Length: 291
Image: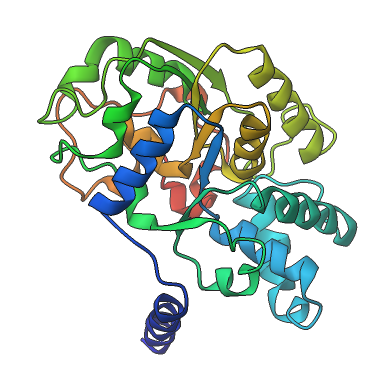
């Protein structure tokens, strides 16, 4: 109870110090950004990744964060190998990429330490990453007619759901509109201690960057752990648009996960991730919330 009360207090202070917009105003801003056709990056921080940045950037915080960062960056965020030097490299990359952010889905108290890097970013509520299928004004409507690239570990399931059930997932049949085209890249999955054949996390990141460069798209929707933020920045540098949503992206395409079991979203057209998309040890990653 004490921990919950402390957490609530921290987030209340954070909300006062880092004001943000939510709902219609945020959706309209994102929609105008998409309509403009200009390069832009919308992104959110992962709870683990932002702590890793602070661990490397602020030595005074390091003793308090080290155990959490070393454990969770490896297991939950899929980062490897975890060392003082590799975390410094990660923090440097993230700090550089923060300057590309046009829209920040804001939610972490730790963002207070990164105000300078994020000073030019429009602050939207993290709640605006959750799909609002009942609201015809939700920003996904601006994806209509776009060449959409989705980067996610559940790529084949996303393609199947879009192709077979796009209009059946939510009460409003156009919650996910018809794209000009849908292309997917199966994201490298290195969570739960897997390395997927790569020597380092940075090597896996570079592989996905090369795959993105081969794709024909207008806008990328991204959900792939710690890879997502720097991939979104890479897309913007390519002159295109990116929205890094994180784990919630799977529910846009009607894919179940334990985290959303009680949200009242599911119907008979929703599916569970394919067996081949469930890594060994998945139950140790946030209690298996994505599967």
